[in-house]
Image (cartoon, rainbow, N blue to C red; front, side, top):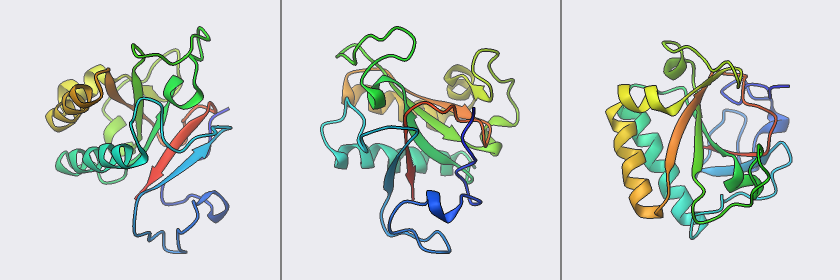
Length: 165
């Protein structure tokens, strides 16, 4: 079952603390969803470093004309173990960012295995600013860091962290 869209129509009950009726908030706010227990993914040295990565990604999205994005992280860096294999998060594990955006996903076919998912490969090929972001953060963290896309309303109900501006 997919979660509800977390964009502008997000119900107030799902808004993170500090978000007003108009959605205005001073600093990025990380919100665990679907049973996630952390607000900073494994693989980051601190919440500040994670916030910098998110703000940098938001800038790359803006430079790419993507202004309807909800950013998040899913996978073993959130849950502590691989959903598929159960292997624990390790120094070799990647960090799976996601971007829930109609503008980003409209031009792509979605995965047959994960409904509504657009694999990072075509996104990185078509959006140089996102490729640059991915390369910078891979260098900083010493592990693969990629942004996949989700059609609004199709984020799987696995543990994730959603970050609002």
